[in-house]
Length: 187
Image (cartoon, rainbow, N blue to C red; front, side):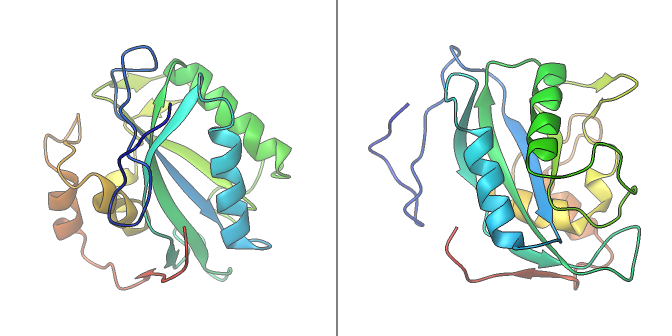
C-alpha cells in the first residue's frame, strides 16, 4: 500500500480497502521502561512490518502521561494508531502479544504496572466481543485520558460501539486529563 497523499504532519494517508479490512481498528501503545519513545516506534514498525497483515493508516502524536492504576512508577509515553488488518480480533491480539513478548515484556506482568511495551486493541470497527482473554471495545478506554487524548487526535468522530458517543465527547467527559501532555517530538 503506497500513498501519494499526506496529512499535515507528512504522514502517508493510506486508503484501506476491503482486501485488508473494512473495519477501523485502533490500537493504544504505551511504554514506561527503557527508551520509551524508541519502544513505541519499534512497536509500530513490528506491527506494520507485513502490510498484508496490518497496514498503518494513521498515528497520533506522542503523549507523556501519568501512570493509571498503580502509582509510584515512571510516566508513560502513549500514542494511538489506526490500522487496517486482515487478522481477526483474536488473531490480532495474539499477534500483538507476540510483539510484546518479543520486545522483552514478560507474558505475565503486574496489572497496570511498569512495562517495556503495552499494546491494546481499543476498537475493532463496531465489533463488540467478550471472551476470556479479549474484550472489545477495551473495557477501560472510555475512562482513560491517556487512551482517549491520542485517539481523539486521529479519530475524534469515531463512535464508541457500546456507549454510542464520539471519542471527542468521551474526552470532554473525562474529569481530569491534566496528567496527559502532548510531546513535540517527531513521530
